[in-house]
Image (cartoon, rainbow, N blue to C red; front, side, top):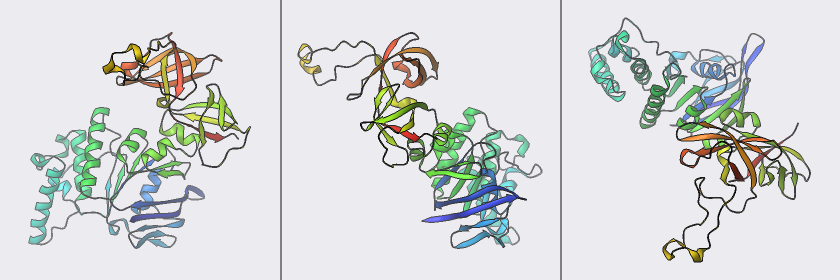
Length: 381
């Protein structure tokens, strides 16, 4: 069920359109990441949904309510939304508990009792039950963001809005906290809209990803759909590492520096014979194996080993059914669990392959290159 619907949204600053014809539907209970470079309009989208910016055209609905449209601007405090900013923005003169309960009613005795119970519940939920009486100045960055999250959750909002809430944290804390927060939001069955410029964050946390550029929505889908089947080369390069090669369709395949490669068009349309294209592969789709592999006859193996594939080496098991081309290892960018290996093909073309750390070649090695899955082909021009 779609809970938040943005339809043809346009937001302008004066005569300048910052968002143009943005449409998306957020299913209830899902976590959606809005991903894009600085200045693409993602924070403007969040602020428009929150009611901080008016719509020049289009509509924003939450449930069955129109909250924004030309001539309609429901006040932010009446939208039932929680906001988690980038810098926590806690009230320095209030304790942790008072910050968490800031948006809760406390006029009557019953209100005060309910408020105290809700604060204790949320403090425990975000792992701060022993810190309710502390001042914000006594908290770490991660603890402050937990307080900010608890404060946003306190009124039980219809929609959670998160504006790059982990950007100011160090990498280790950021990775741990964002995983905790995503799990918490799902456990609470919150519908959430997260703005981020961090590709890993968007792909690892979200149920759906919206990729934006220049005020427009370029692609919407699950993380796997956006990463595995980007609709444009720009989206492909923005959400991950790419290997791009010029090619031409011939006999149902694409001729390129890697030889004839299986490929599909990015938009699913049939490709004409002889059409020039730009091929895109992910580095992990490229497989390396030794340039010379000694093939052992199954008859020479012990009977207990005959079911095991004979093509094994320090570079892993070779995929079958693909053409192979020889390349030279130029450099290795080691990343711990894996590495990006730069390779020079016979014609001088440079490509990169992602290789698991136990299977790394060494600089200067001659290796054979094969492709694990069809490449994506994009029209030229």
